[in-house]
Length: 411
Picture 1 (cartoon, rainbow, N blue to C red):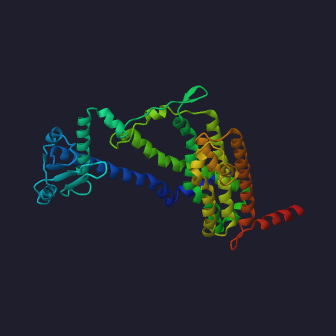
Picture 2: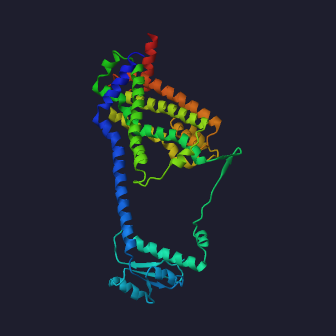
Picture 3: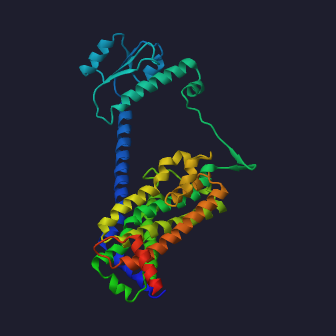
């Protein structure tokens, strides 16, 4: 296509020169870094405070009506018993002790009452935590088995092994690869949606489109813009991912980030779900881009185009409202409808593909629908841009486009 490379280069250079572009994509990693830093220093402060409190235990008196609290546990805490509840509360009020615990006769029906001096919102929780730990420790001593206590308090774990066609599988590990395409498609909508919408209205509002079309065909201009948008999308994703990868590799221990190497090694890349996810991503991108470029070309200003942008986004994210249904393998008319309707199909099919609830025949039908819809949307965007680029005062209707097409053909 004539001057295709020129269009791509022009779009990229123009966007890279905009300060707003870099501010918008750098804002996410910068804000994330600030939040992570605050959390890190808060964790450090909290851990220092915990160490300080362990070195300086608080004074404690206990009134035990349940007869569960053991003398050995109280001795370890250097705590003493008291028979009068009001006297214990009074000691806290007068500052003679730091805390007073009152255990009712039936702790399963009535709460443990904790009275303590105020050490601040973040530090007052140490008193309630100790009151519960003291009760559990004493109960374990009476039962004589910590294992029974853990069973009763639901602190047991189970290990599950899943089989499919005689082979052991890990559904979570198998879900990761297809889910990547879902995340990428969502990121494209969030990061590039507004830029796609204004990619044609900017020249239109500046009234430089006529000059561009004297040397570049409308097809080359639209396709060049789409390719440039793809490149910009990759740049934005890399700018967001690279700081996260560096934080994980260089500061994982300092930031208390879990070690994901074991999980990453278990990720399964299956051919069909991966290929289907890639095909749906490309088809959905064509459909999404074609619709937004067409809206931008048909509207006289970017402000008017934004009203339709919200409608398109709302329709495309409708599948997230039915997430539980899409995760289930049970057939449903709602799920089938979402998978076959062009505007909802990309997300619906990507979600079902990630959770392995998409039958082969529905996957193929849905993919064909999205791909054909994407081609139609791109073709429509080119045609609308061709006729709508000179309309500065009113919206371009579909009837106008096809009437002009008929007039052109009759000539």
